[in-house]
Length: 378
Image 1 (cartoon, helix red, strand yellow):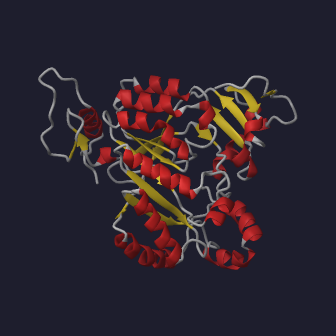
Image 2 (image 1 turned 135 degrees about the horizontal axis):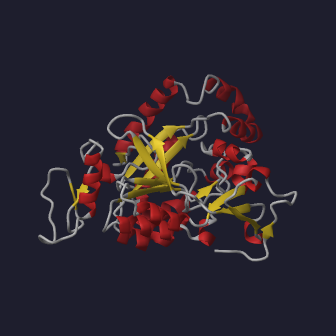
Image 3 (image 1 turned 120 degrees about the vertical axis):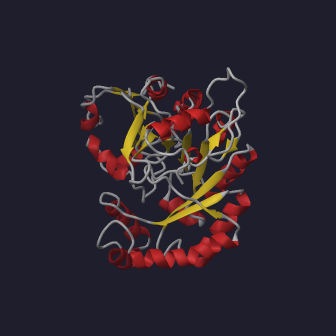
């Protein structure tokens, strides 16, 4: 996608100094369709990001981020500080100055063909959302999905974007070749609060409809009830209604966690809180005065409240990937046979005959074995 006649010169006053220094900046673009937002198109040098893991059997994880910054503008977004690396602020700039890696699919295809690539599970949506509004115009995800599936690379997607529905036919086809794991992030089930704290996101109703659409395509879909916001979304009534709606939409699991506020996020969240709920500022300064995470006492209290509700609604408790923080890939716990069926580790793997090409399960198994770990990890 390209917009003609909308470019900003890098030496104009409105251009941003950190971006102007990039040698891979193609141009900066504004359009009336996205009022107040500037898109900075760059040529990515790499697509796959290797990130440290949380220890255990998988020492690292892999992610892809087609965009930096996010027009969803969630005031609690943990990725906000990443914008400061480009001399952009973690507040309004994160919401309105969006970096677009216009060649990410092409670069990814080249990386996936390298002999060194081990077909490790790849996570999307763990930093900024791949289905934010700009994806409707740039359409980067179809090329990414195709590249991953054709290379035999399992992948997962976590998103708030109902635009995911555009690619469901493609994702269902990809799931015949590799494990594809999907989850919708739906944290707030009060419409007024949702539009205040997540002003650029689709409505809760639209995201629940996306969960249903995923299920109708024969795919599992988890719901990330994250973050649970103290004193605003942690009431028993809100949690019960959230889980009821998730179950009704067809969610196959629910993963929850309390809000955490790292430096660069805390300040922006407190500005919103002081504007919308100033009466809560003292409680928040007490809860988060010592660090990023809510105190253990609060987290224990929250677990005691929500776990019985999860069981009551017949939902499974989901588990996040310890390395990426996104959806845990089923490739880590189940392989596929030659006919595309998922089978636990140890089951007889069927193939199309002596001359059949290695299937996706065999590729995943070989890559994990090469790391010195078993194909089924959790």
